Length: 128
Image (tube, rainbow, N blue to C red; front, side):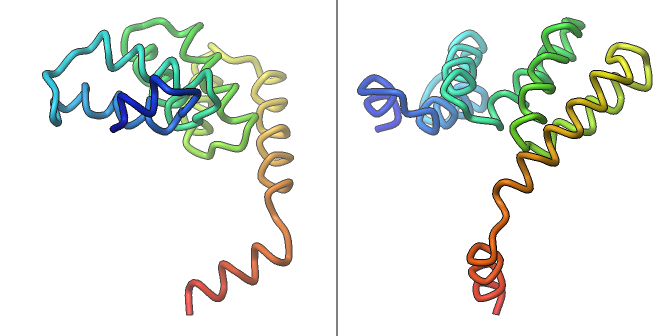
């Protein structure tokens, strides 16, 4: 079903799920190339988890320029997970203080944009 959904349109979640299936061999044979393809499609579609995963993969492959770009994009769009890698890149000199500060400010702006009284009330009601 995920394959069909991905073929029919810009379903970033379907691409993200397919990437996980190819990574773990769930219902398909493990295939790193297809995993990366589906992560890239999901990231292009705006899936922040996919963007983060690509950043982690590129970092492990010593492609720090690419990893840094993935994490900066994800952080600027409000993805908390990318803040840790960016902090590490900043500490070892791969991300400048200015770029790190810009990413942090953009992250906070994105997070603030998702806050509202209605959202907070719904979250509180869900916890009860």
